[in-house]
Length: 81
Image (cartoon, rainbow, N blue to C red; front, side, top):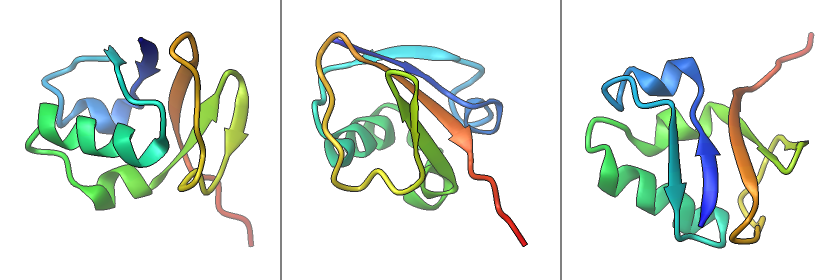
């Protein structure tokens, strides 16, 4: 199962849970699993974050896949100007 580390912002909706494991192998399935586990979280909250998959930050991970031994880290998106 993939290991997921949630951002501090996301932890407000998980009762402080920082790390979980998921059975998902695609980003879309990951989001679905998060929303099912944590009803207070919604897609807008998840969409405010980039996703690092095994150390590579992906700003728009909509079509990304990952392995069952992957480490996934949600990080706040960085905006430039």
